[in-house]
Amino acid sequence: MRVLVDGHEDGAINPADRGFNYGDGLFETLAVRNGQARFVDWHLERLATGAARLGIPLPDAVLLKDEVARACPGDRGVVRVVLTRGSGPRDYRPPREPRPLRVVSGSPWPERDPACWTEGVRLRWCETRLGRNPRLAGIKHLNRLEQVLARAEWAGDEVAEGLMMDEGGNVIGGTRTNLFAIFEDGLATPALDQCGVAGVMRCAFRRWAAGQGIAIAERRLPAEELAGARGLLLTNSLIGAWPVRALAERVFDLDPRVAAFNAWLERR
Amino acid sequence: MRVLVDGHEDGAINPADRGFNYGDGLFETLAVRNGQARFVDWHLERLATGAARLGIPLPDAVLLKDEVARACPGDRGVVRVVLTRGSGPRDYRPPREPRPLRVVSGSPWPERDPACWTEGVRLRWCETRLGRNPRLAGIKHLNRLEQVLARAEWAGDEVAEGLMMDEGGNVIGGTRTNLFAIFEDGLATPALDQCGVAGVMRCAFRRWAAGQGIAIAERRLPAEELAGARGLLLTNSLIGAWPVRALAERVFDLDPRVAAFNAWLERR
View 1 (cartoon, chains in turn blue, purple):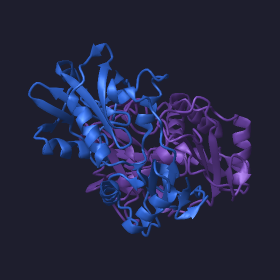
View 2 (spheres, rainbow over the protein chains, first blue to last red):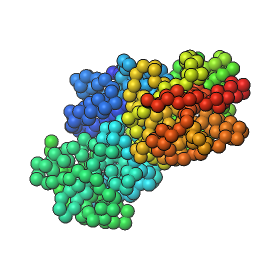
View 3 (cartoon, each protein chain N blue to C red):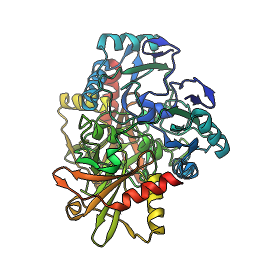
View 4 (cartoon, rainbow over the protein chains, first blue to last red):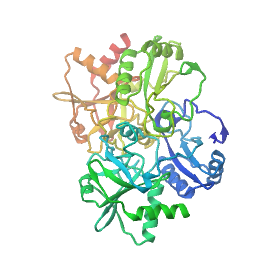
Protein backbone atom coordinates (compact mmCIF):
# COMPACT_ATOMS: atom_id res chain seq x y z
CA MET A 1 0.00 0.00 0.00
CA ARG A 2 1.31 3.43 -0.91
CA VAL A 3 0.49 7.09 -0.43
CA LEU A 4 1.10 9.13 -3.57
CA VAL A 5 1.15 12.92 -3.29
CA ASP A 6 1.04 14.32 -6.81
CA GLY A 7 2.39 10.95 -7.88
CA HIS A 8 5.32 10.88 -5.45
CA GLU A 9 5.62 8.28 -2.75
CA ASP A 10 5.76 9.44 0.86
CA GLY A 11 5.07 13.03 -0.03
CA ALA A 12 3.51 15.41 2.44
CA ILE A 13 0.95 18.18 2.26
CA ASN A 14 1.94 21.82 2.07
CA PRO A 15 0.49 23.71 5.08
CA ALA A 16 -0.79 26.30 2.57
CA ASP A 17 -2.94 23.69 0.77
CA ARG A 18 -6.54 24.85 0.43
CA GLY A 19 -7.83 21.38 1.14
CA PHE A 20 -6.20 21.59 4.54
CA ASN A 21 -7.22 25.18 5.23
CA TYR A 22 -10.79 25.31 3.86
CA GLY A 23 -11.74 21.78 2.87
CA ASP A 24 -11.51 23.16 -0.67
CA GLY A 25 -11.52 19.88 -2.54
CA LEU A 26 -13.12 16.51 -3.19
CA PHE A 27 -12.53 12.84 -2.50
CA GLU A 28 -13.44 9.36 -3.64
CA THR A 29 -13.17 6.03 -1.84
CA LEU A 30 -12.75 3.04 -4.14
CA ALA A 31 -12.93 -0.67 -3.41
CA VAL A 32 -10.20 -2.79 -5.01
CA ARG A 33 -11.48 -6.33 -5.54
CA ASN A 34 -9.70 -9.04 -7.56
CA GLY A 35 -7.01 -6.51 -8.38
CA GLN A 36 -9.46 -4.07 -9.99
CA ALA A 37 -10.75 -0.73 -8.70
CA ARG A 38 -14.52 -1.32 -8.73
CA PHE A 39 -16.63 1.20 -10.68
CA VAL A 40 -13.54 3.33 -11.23
CA ASP A 41 -15.13 5.14 -14.18
CA TRP A 42 -18.18 6.11 -12.14
CA HIS A 43 -15.95 7.35 -9.33
CA LEU A 44 -13.99 9.48 -11.78
CA GLU A 45 -17.25 10.74 -13.25
CA ARG A 46 -18.46 11.89 -9.85
CA LEU A 47 -15.05 13.47 -9.19
CA ALA A 48 -15.42 15.34 -12.48
CA THR A 49 -18.92 16.53 -11.51
CA GLY A 50 -17.59 17.83 -8.20
CA ALA A 51 -14.55 19.45 -9.82
CA ALA A 52 -16.80 21.25 -12.32
CA ARG A 53 -19.06 22.43 -9.47
CA LEU A 54 -16.13 23.79 -7.45
CA GLY A 55 -14.13 25.02 -10.44
CA ILE A 56 -11.12 22.80 -9.77
CA PRO A 57 -9.18 21.61 -12.85
CA LEU A 58 -9.45 17.84 -13.22
CA PRO A 59 -6.33 15.69 -13.53
CA ASP A 60 -6.09 13.32 -16.48
CA ALA A 61 -8.20 10.18 -15.96
CA VAL A 62 -5.45 7.86 -17.24
CA LEU A 63 -3.01 9.36 -14.75
CA LEU A 64 -5.51 8.95 -11.90
CA LYS A 65 -6.25 5.33 -12.82
CA ASP A 66 -2.55 4.59 -12.94
CA GLU A 67 -2.06 6.10 -9.49
CA VAL A 68 -5.01 4.16 -8.10
CA ALA A 69 -3.37 0.95 -9.33
CA ARG A 70 0.02 1.97 -7.90
CA ALA A 71 -1.45 2.91 -4.50
CA CYS A 72 -3.07 -0.49 -4.06
CA PRO A 73 -1.21 -3.05 -6.15
CA GLY A 74 -2.66 -6.11 -4.39
CA ASP A 75 -5.74 -8.20 -4.89
CA ARG A 76 -7.99 -6.25 -2.53
CA GLY A 77 -7.87 -3.02 -0.62
CA VAL A 78 -9.22 0.50 -0.48
CA VAL A 79 -7.99 3.54 -2.38
CA ARG A 80 -8.80 7.06 -1.34
CA VAL A 81 -8.36 9.82 -3.93
CA VAL A 82 -8.28 13.40 -2.67
CA LEU A 83 -8.24 16.31 -5.10
CA THR A 84 -7.78 19.82 -3.72
CA ARG A 85 -7.48 23.24 -5.33
CA GLY A 86 -3.82 23.20 -4.24
CA SER A 87 -1.84 25.79 -2.33
CA GLY A 88 -2.59 29.46 -2.30
CA PRO A 89 -2.38 32.66 -0.28
CA ARG A 90 -4.49 33.12 2.86
CA ASP A 91 -7.73 34.12 1.09
CA TYR A 92 -11.05 32.38 0.42
CA ARG A 93 -10.83 33.63 -3.17
CA PRO A 94 -9.60 30.79 -5.38
CA PRO A 95 -6.31 31.49 -7.18
CA ARG A 96 -6.86 32.43 -10.80
CA GLU A 97 -4.63 29.59 -11.99
CA PRO A 98 -4.90 26.89 -9.35
CA ARG A 99 -2.45 24.01 -9.34
CA PRO A 100 -4.56 21.20 -7.90
CA LEU A 101 -3.09 18.64 -5.53
CA ARG A 102 -3.92 14.96 -5.70
CA VAL A 103 -3.35 12.44 -2.94
CA VAL A 104 -3.98 8.80 -3.81
CA SER A 105 -3.56 6.43 -0.87
CA GLY A 106 -4.08 2.72 -0.47
CA SER A 107 -5.14 0.95 2.70
CA PRO A 108 -5.96 -2.67 3.59
CA TRP A 109 -9.41 -4.07 2.92
CA PRO A 110 -11.49 -3.64 6.09
CA GLU A 111 -12.67 -7.00 7.37
CA ARG A 112 -16.18 -6.86 8.75
CA ASP A 113 -18.51 -9.36 10.37
CA PRO A 114 -20.20 -11.33 7.53
CA ALA A 115 -23.42 -11.20 9.55
CA CYS A 116 -23.77 -7.57 8.45
CA TRP A 117 -24.71 -8.91 5.01
CA THR A 118 -26.55 -12.09 6.03
CA GLU A 119 -28.41 -10.98 9.15
CA GLY A 120 -28.57 -7.24 8.62
CA VAL A 121 -27.30 -4.28 10.61
CA ARG A 122 -28.67 -2.16 13.42
CA LEU A 123 -29.17 1.59 12.87
CA ARG A 124 -29.84 4.57 15.08
CA TRP A 125 -30.91 8.15 14.49
CA CYS A 126 -28.26 10.86 14.70
CA GLU A 127 -29.03 14.14 16.40
CA THR A 128 -26.63 16.04 14.15
CA ARG A 129 -28.54 17.31 11.13
CA LEU A 130 -27.35 18.14 7.65
CA GLY A 131 -27.44 21.78 6.58
CA ARG A 132 -28.95 22.39 3.17
CA ASN A 133 -26.86 23.80 0.37
CA PRO A 134 -27.81 22.97 -3.21
CA ARG A 135 -24.40 24.09 -4.51
CA LEU A 136 -22.65 21.45 -2.40
CA ALA A 137 -25.32 18.74 -2.46
CA GLY A 138 -24.59 15.39 -4.07
CA ILE A 139 -20.85 15.86 -4.56
CA LYS A 140 -18.24 14.31 -2.29
CA HIS A 141 -16.42 17.41 -1.07
CA LEU A 142 -14.02 17.68 1.86
CA ASN A 143 -16.34 19.60 4.22
CA ARG A 144 -17.37 16.63 6.34
CA LEU A 145 -17.71 17.98 9.88
CA GLU A 146 -21.42 17.12 9.96
CA GLN A 147 -20.61 13.46 9.32
CA VAL A 148 -17.77 13.55 11.86
CA LEU A 149 -20.05 14.95 14.57
CA ALA A 150 -22.82 12.50 13.70
CA ARG A 151 -20.44 9.53 13.79
CA ALA A 152 -19.11 10.68 17.17
CA GLU A 153 -22.60 10.30 18.67
CA TRP A 154 -22.21 6.61 19.42
CA ALA A 155 -19.47 4.15 20.36
CA GLY A 156 -19.22 0.41 20.09
CA ASP A 157 -19.93 -1.89 17.16
CA GLU A 158 -23.48 -2.96 17.95
CA VAL A 159 -24.90 -0.07 15.95
CA ALA A 160 -23.39 -0.12 12.47
CA GLU A 161 -24.64 3.18 11.15
CA GLY A 162 -26.56 6.32 12.06
CA LEU A 163 -29.22 7.94 9.90
CA MET A 164 -29.12 11.68 9.37
CA MET A 165 -31.95 14.08 8.65
CA ASP A 166 -31.81 17.48 7.05
CA GLU A 167 -32.95 20.53 8.94
CA GLY A 168 -36.50 19.94 7.74
CA GLY A 169 -36.75 16.42 9.15
CA ASN A 170 -36.26 14.57 5.87
CA VAL A 171 -34.02 11.53 6.11
CA ILE A 172 -31.00 11.90 3.82
CA GLY A 173 -28.94 8.78 4.51
CA GLY A 174 -26.36 7.29 6.86
CA THR A 175 -23.16 9.04 7.90
CA ARG A 176 -21.29 7.12 5.18
CA THR A 177 -24.06 5.28 3.35
CA ASN A 178 -27.05 5.92 1.12
CA LEU A 179 -30.47 4.68 2.15
CA PHE A 180 -33.24 2.85 0.30
CA ALA A 181 -36.62 2.25 1.93
CA ILE A 182 -38.83 -0.62 0.82
CA PHE A 183 -42.56 0.16 0.80
CA GLU A 184 -45.53 -1.96 -0.26
CA ASP A 185 -45.72 -0.09 -3.54
CA GLY A 186 -42.00 0.07 -4.35
CA LEU A 187 -38.65 1.42 -3.22
CA ALA A 188 -37.72 5.01 -2.41
CA THR A 189 -34.39 6.77 -1.88
CA PRO A 190 -33.90 10.31 -0.59
CA ALA A 191 -33.49 13.13 -3.10
CA LEU A 192 -29.99 14.61 -2.72
CA ASP A 193 -30.49 18.03 -4.27
CA GLN A 194 -30.16 19.92 -0.95
CA CYS A 195 -27.57 17.86 0.95
CA GLY A 196 -26.05 14.40 1.11
CA VAL A 197 -23.65 12.54 -1.16
CA ALA A 198 -24.82 10.70 -4.28
CA GLY A 199 -22.88 7.48 -3.75
CA VAL A 200 -21.44 5.37 -6.54
CA MET A 201 -22.96 2.21 -5.01
CA ARG A 202 -26.31 4.01 -4.81
CA CYS A 203 -26.00 4.51 -8.54
CA ALA A 204 -25.02 0.85 -9.04
CA PHE A 205 -27.96 -0.37 -6.97
CA ARG A 206 -30.39 1.79 -8.94
CA ARG A 207 -29.07 0.52 -12.25
CA TRP A 208 -29.24 -3.09 -11.07
CA ALA A 209 -32.78 -2.54 -9.79
CA ALA A 210 -33.82 -0.99 -13.11
CA GLY A 211 -32.54 -4.12 -14.85
CA GLN A 212 -34.67 -6.22 -12.48
CA GLY A 213 -37.77 -4.17 -13.15
CA ILE A 214 -37.72 -2.76 -9.59
CA ALA A 215 -39.00 0.82 -9.50
CA ILE A 216 -37.18 3.25 -7.18
CA ALA A 217 -38.60 6.69 -6.50
CA GLU A 218 -36.08 9.45 -5.72
CA ARG A 219 -37.93 11.91 -3.52
CA ARG A 220 -38.22 13.79 -0.22
CA LEU A 221 -38.53 11.19 2.51
CA PRO A 222 -39.81 12.60 5.83
CA ALA A 223 -38.24 10.57 8.63
CA GLU A 224 -41.62 9.48 10.02
CA GLU A 225 -42.38 7.72 6.72
CA LEU A 226 -39.80 5.07 7.59
CA ALA A 227 -42.26 3.78 10.20
CA GLY A 228 -44.36 2.55 7.29
CA ALA A 229 -41.47 0.86 5.47
CA ARG A 230 -41.33 -2.93 5.16
CA GLY A 231 -37.55 -2.84 5.04
CA LEU A 232 -34.46 -0.70 4.65
CA LEU A 233 -31.08 -1.13 3.01
CA LEU A 234 -27.87 0.85 2.91
CA THR A 235 -25.31 1.15 0.12
CA ASN A 236 -21.67 2.19 0.15
CA SER A 237 -18.77 1.68 -2.24
CA LEU A 238 -16.95 -0.66 0.11
CA ILE A 239 -19.82 -2.62 1.62
CA GLY A 240 -22.08 -2.99 -1.40
CA ALA A 241 -25.52 -3.26 0.24
CA TRP A 242 -26.40 -4.02 3.85
CA PRO A 243 -29.91 -5.11 4.77
CA VAL A 244 -31.18 -3.36 7.88
CA ARG A 245 -32.28 -5.54 10.79
CA ALA A 246 -33.38 -2.74 13.09
CA LEU A 247 -33.68 1.04 13.29
CA ALA A 248 -33.79 2.06 16.95
CA GLU A 249 -36.71 -0.06 18.35
CA ARG A 250 -38.20 -0.98 14.99
CA VAL A 251 -37.29 -4.42 13.60
CA PHE A 252 -37.48 -5.23 9.89
CA ASP A 253 -37.62 -8.41 7.85
CA LEU A 254 -34.74 -8.83 5.42
CA ASP A 255 -35.57 -8.39 1.76
CA PRO A 256 -34.00 -11.12 -0.42
CA ARG A 257 -33.28 -8.56 -3.14
CA VAL A 258 -30.40 -7.15 -1.06
CA ALA A 259 -28.61 -10.49 -1.16
CA ALA A 260 -29.39 -10.78 -4.87
CA PHE A 261 -27.73 -7.44 -5.50
CA ASN A 262 -24.64 -8.36 -3.47
CA ALA A 263 -24.36 -11.66 -5.36
CA TRP A 264 -24.54 -9.75 -8.65
CA LEU A 265 -21.86 -7.37 -7.36
CA GLU A 266 -19.54 -10.25 -6.46
CA ARG A 267 -20.04 -11.91 -9.85
CA ARG A 268 -19.12 -8.79 -11.86
CA MET B 1 7.82 34.79 8.95
CA ARG B 2 7.69 31.12 9.80
CA VAL B 3 5.42 28.12 9.47
CA LEU B 4 5.41 25.95 12.59
CA VAL B 5 3.89 22.49 12.36
CA ASP B 6 3.51 21.19 15.92
CA GLY B 7 6.21 23.70 16.79
CA HIS B 8 8.69 22.60 14.12
CA GLU B 9 9.79 24.90 11.35
CA ASP B 10 9.15 23.86 7.77
CA GLY B 11 7.13 20.85 8.79
CA ALA B 12 4.53 19.34 6.50
CA ILE B 13 1.08 17.86 6.94
CA ASN B 14 0.53 14.12 7.13
CA PRO B 15 -1.81 13.04 4.28
CA ALA B 16 -3.82 11.16 6.94
CA ASP B 17 -4.56 14.38 8.85
CA ARG B 18 -8.28 14.77 9.53
CA GLY B 19 -8.11 18.49 8.87
CA PHE B 20 -7.00 17.68 5.33
CA ASN B 21 -9.45 14.83 4.82
CA TYR B 22 -12.63 16.14 6.48
CA GLY B 23 -11.97 19.74 7.48
CA ASP B 24 -12.03 18.32 11.01
CA GLY B 25 -10.54 21.29 12.80
CA LEU B 26 -10.56 25.01 13.55
CA PHE B 27 -8.60 28.13 12.74
CA GLU B 28 -7.91 31.66 13.89
CA THR B 29 -6.46 34.62 12.01
CA LEU B 30 -4.67 37.15 14.22
CA ALA B 31 -3.38 40.62 13.45
CA VAL B 32 0.09 41.40 14.76
CA ARG B 33 0.43 45.14 15.34
CA ASN B 34 3.30 46.86 17.17
CA GLY B 35 4.80 43.44 17.80
CA GLN B 36 1.72 42.18 19.64
CA ALA B 37 -0.92 39.69 18.54
CA ARG B 38 -4.11 41.74 18.86
CA PHE B 39 -6.89 40.28 21.02
CA VAL B 40 -4.91 37.04 21.35
CA ASP B 41 -6.83 35.99 24.46
CA TRP B 42 -10.18 36.38 22.70
CA HIS B 43 -8.89 34.38 19.73
CA LEU B 44 -7.76 31.61 22.05
CA GLU B 45 -11.11 31.75 23.82
CA ARG B 46 -12.99 31.25 20.54
CA LEU B 47 -10.58 28.45 19.63
CA ALA B 48 -11.40 26.84 22.97
CA THR B 49 -15.14 27.19 22.33
CA GLY B 50 -14.75 25.52 18.94
CA ALA B 51 -12.51 22.78 20.33
CA ALA B 52 -15.06 22.00 23.02
CA ARG B 53 -17.84 21.89 20.42
CA LEU B 54 -15.90 19.50 18.17
CA GLY B 55 -14.34 17.51 21.01
CA ILE B 56 -10.74 18.33 20.04
CA PRO B 57 -8.24 18.57 22.93
CA LEU B 58 -6.92 22.11 23.23
CA PRO B 59 -3.17 22.80 23.27
CA ASP B 60 -1.75 24.81 26.12
CA ALA B 61 -2.42 28.55 25.73
CA VAL B 62 1.13 29.53 26.73
CA LEU B 63 2.52 27.21 24.06
CA LEU B 64 0.17 28.66 21.42
CA LYS B 65 1.05 32.25 22.34
CA ASP B 66 4.73 31.40 22.13
CA GLU B 67 4.26 29.89 18.68
CA VAL B 68 2.25 32.90 17.53
CA ALA B 69 5.16 35.13 18.55
CA ARG B 70 7.70 32.85 16.85
CA ALA B 71 5.69 32.65 13.62
CA CYS B 72 5.56 36.42 13.26
CA PRO B 73 8.47 37.96 15.13
CA GLY B 74 8.27 41.37 13.46
CA ASP B 75 6.34 44.52 14.16
CA ARG B 76 3.31 43.71 12.07
CA GLY B 77 1.94 40.76 10.19
CA VAL B 78 -0.72 38.09 10.22
CA VAL B 79 -0.69 34.78 12.07
CA ARG B 80 -2.95 31.92 11.16
CA VAL B 81 -3.45 29.18 13.76
CA VAL B 82 -4.93 25.89 12.55
CA LEU B 83 -5.88 23.17 15.02
CA THR B 84 -7.01 19.80 13.67
CA ARG B 85 -7.99 16.52 15.31
CA GLY B 86 -4.73 15.10 13.91
CA SER B 87 -4.14 11.97 11.88
CA GLY B 88 -6.32 8.92 11.98
CA PRO B 89 -7.61 5.96 10.02
CA ARG B 90 -9.98 6.46 7.08
CA ASP B 91 -13.19 6.81 9.13
CA TYR B 92 -15.45 9.73 10.06
CA ARG B 93 -15.45 8.44 13.64
CA PRO B 94 -12.98 10.49 15.67
CA PRO B 95 -10.11 8.47 17.20
CA ARG B 96 -10.70 7.79 20.91
CA GLU B 97 -7.42 9.46 21.83
CA PRO B 98 -6.78 12.07 19.17
CA ARG B 99 -3.37 13.70 18.88
CA PRO B 100 -4.28 17.15 17.60
CA LEU B 101 -2.12 18.94 15.06
CA ARG B 102 -1.37 22.63 15.23
CA VAL B 103 -0.05 24.77 12.40
CA VAL B 104 0.94 28.32 13.23
CA SER B 105 2.03 30.36 10.24
CA GLY B 106 3.04 33.97 9.82
CA SER B 107 2.53 36.08 6.72
CA PRO B 108 3.17 39.73 5.84
CA TRP B 109 0.68 42.40 6.78
CA PRO B 110 -1.68 42.91 3.80
CA GLU B 111 -1.49 46.49 2.56
CA ARG B 112 -4.87 47.82 1.49
CA ASP B 113 -6.09 51.10 0.03
CA PRO B 114 -6.58 53.51 2.99
CA ALA B 115 -9.73 54.74 1.24
CA CYS B 116 -11.44 51.55 2.43
CA TRP B 117 -11.46 53.08 5.91
CA THR B 118 -11.93 56.75 5.01
CA GLU B 119 -14.33 56.56 2.06
CA GLY B 120 -15.94 53.18 2.67
CA VAL B 121 -16.17 50.02 0.62
CA ARG B 122 -18.53 48.70 -2.02
CA LEU B 123 -20.45 45.45 -1.37
CA ARG B 124 -22.46 43.03 -3.46
CA TRP B 125 -24.85 40.21 -2.72
CA CYS B 126 -23.56 36.66 -3.10
CA GLU B 127 -25.74 34.01 -4.68
CA THR B 128 -24.14 31.26 -2.59
CA ARG B 129 -26.15 30.81 0.59
CA LEU B 130 -25.09 29.50 3.98
CA GLY B 131 -26.57 26.20 5.11
CA ARG B 132 -27.89 26.19 8.65
CA ASN B 133 -26.34 23.99 11.29
CA PRO B 134 -26.55 25.07 14.95
CA ARG B 135 -23.79 22.63 15.94
CA LEU B 136 -21.31 24.37 13.64
CA ALA B 137 -22.64 27.94 13.88
CA GLY B 138 -20.47 30.67 15.36
CA ILE B 139 -17.22 28.71 15.55
CA LYS B 140 -14.40 29.10 13.04
CA HIS B 141 -14.10 25.56 11.72
CA LEU B 142 -12.28 24.40 8.62
CA ASN B 143 -15.38 23.63 6.48
CA ARG B 144 -15.28 26.79 4.40
CA LEU B 145 -16.45 25.77 0.93
CA GLU B 146 -19.47 28.06 1.14
CA GLN B 147 -17.19 31.06 1.66
CA VAL B 148 -14.87 29.88 -1.12
CA LEU B 149 -17.75 29.57 -3.60
CA ALA B 150 -19.19 32.93 -2.53
CA ARG B 151 -15.81 34.67 -2.87
CA ALA B 152 -15.38 33.15 -6.33
CA GLU B 153 -18.52 34.93 -7.54
CA TRP B 154 -16.74 38.17 -8.40
CA ALA B 155 -13.32 39.31 -9.60
CA GLY B 156 -11.55 42.64 -9.43
CA ASP B 157 -11.01 44.96 -6.50
CA GLU B 158 -13.86 47.42 -6.99
CA VAL B 159 -16.16 45.30 -4.82
CA ALA B 160 -14.46 44.68 -1.48
CA GLU B 161 -16.84 42.14 0.00
CA GLY B 162 -19.92 40.07 -0.68
CA LEU B 163 -22.85 39.64 1.71
CA MET B 164 -24.22 36.15 2.28
CA MET B 165 -27.72 35.10 3.31
CA ASP B 166 -28.83 31.91 4.94
CA GLU B 167 -31.28 29.63 3.23
CA GLY B 168 -34.18 31.59 4.70
CA GLY B 169 -33.08 34.94 3.25
CA ASN B 170 -31.60 36.37 6.46
CA VAL B 171 -28.34 38.23 5.96
CA ILE B 172 -25.55 36.62 8.00
CA GLY B 173 -22.46 38.64 7.07
CA GLY B 174 -19.72 39.00 4.49
CA THR B 175 -17.59 36.13 3.20
CA ARG B 176 -14.87 37.05 5.73
CA THR B 177 -16.49 39.83 7.76
CA ASN B 178 -19.29 40.43 10.25
CA LEU B 179 -21.98 42.95 9.49
CA PHE B 180 -23.61 45.71 11.54
CA ALA B 181 -26.58 47.67 10.19
CA ILE B 182 -27.32 51.16 11.44
CA PHE B 183 -31.03 51.96 11.79
CA GLU B 184 -32.77 55.08 13.06
CA ASP B 185 -33.43 53.40 16.39
CA GLY B 186 -30.06 51.72 16.88
CA LEU B 187 -27.65 49.15 15.48
CA ALA B 188 -28.32 45.52 14.66
CA THR B 189 -26.06 42.58 13.87
CA PRO B 190 -27.17 39.15 12.61
CA ALA B 191 -27.73 36.37 15.13
CA LEU B 192 -25.18 33.61 14.47
CA ASP B 193 -26.88 30.64 16.13
CA GLN B 194 -27.64 28.87 12.82
CA CYS B 195 -24.63 29.73 10.67
CA GLY B 196 -21.84 32.27 10.31
CA VAL B 197 -18.71 32.95 12.34
CA ALA B 198 -18.75 35.05 15.51
CA GLY B 199 -15.72 37.21 14.78
CA VAL B 200 -13.31 38.50 17.40
CA MET B 201 -13.54 42.03 15.94
CA ARG B 202 -17.35 41.75 16.06
CA CYS B 203 -16.94 41.09 19.76
CA ALA B 204 -14.52 44.02 20.12
CA PHE B 205 -16.88 46.37 18.30
CA ARG B 206 -19.80 45.34 20.49
CA ARG B 207 -17.81 45.91 23.67
CA TRP B 208 -16.57 49.28 22.44
CA ALA B 209 -20.13 50.25 21.47
CA ALA B 210 -21.43 49.20 24.90
CA GLY B 211 -18.84 51.51 26.48
CA GLN B 212 -20.11 54.34 24.26
CA GLY B 213 -23.72 53.72 25.21
CA ILE B 214 -24.53 52.47 21.69
CA ALA B 215 -27.17 49.72 21.75
CA ILE B 216 -26.70 46.82 19.34
CA ALA B 217 -29.45 44.25 18.83
CA GLU B 218 -28.37 40.74 17.88
CA ARG B 219 -31.23 39.28 15.89
CA ARG B 220 -32.55 37.74 12.66
CA LEU B 221 -31.99 40.29 9.93
CA PRO B 222 -34.02 39.60 6.77
CA ALA B 223 -32.00 40.86 3.80
CA GLU B 224 -34.75 43.24 2.69
CA GLU B 225 -34.44 45.10 6.01
CA LEU B 226 -31.08 46.49 4.87
CA ALA B 227 -33.01 48.72 2.46
CA GLY B 228 -34.18 50.62 5.53
CA ALA B 229 -30.72 50.98 7.06
CA ARG B 230 -29.01 54.37 7.27
CA GLY B 231 -25.62 52.75 7.10
CA LEU B 232 -23.64 49.53 7.25
CA LEU B 233 -20.25 48.53 8.59
CA LEU B 234 -18.12 45.43 8.45
CA THR B 235 -15.68 44.05 11.01
CA ASN B 236 -12.80 41.62 10.70
CA SER B 237 -9.74 40.85 12.82
CA LEU B 238 -7.34 42.29 10.27
CA ILE B 239 -9.28 45.29 8.97
CA GLY B 240 -10.92 46.50 12.16
CA ALA B 241 -14.08 48.16 10.84
CA TRP B 242 -14.88 49.29 7.31
CA PRO B 243 -17.72 51.71 6.68
CA VAL B 244 -19.84 50.68 3.69
CA ARG B 245 -20.19 53.19 0.86
CA ALA B 246 -22.54 51.13 -1.29
CA LEU B 247 -24.38 47.81 -1.39
CA ALA B 248 -25.21 46.99 -5.01
CA GLU B 249 -27.11 50.12 -6.22
CA ARG B 250 -27.82 51.51 -2.76
CA VAL B 251 -25.46 54.25 -1.50
CA PHE B 252 -24.99 55.00 2.21
CA ASP B 253 -23.65 57.92 4.21
CA LEU B 254 -20.66 57.11 6.38
CA ASP B 255 -21.27 56.95 10.11
CA PRO B 256 -18.54 58.79 12.10
CA ARG B 257 -18.69 56.08 14.80
CA VAL B 258 -16.84 53.69 12.49
CA ALA B 259 -13.83 56.02 12.37
CA ALA B 260 -14.10 56.51 16.13
CA PHE B 261 -13.90 52.75 16.67
CA ASN B 262 -10.89 52.39 14.36
CA ALA B 263 -9.13 55.25 16.17
CA TRP B 264 -9.79 53.52 19.50
CA LEU B 265 -8.43 50.28 18.03
CA GLU B 266 -5.23 51.98 16.87
CA ARG B 267 -4.69 53.62 20.27
CA ARG B 268 -4.97 50.39 22.24
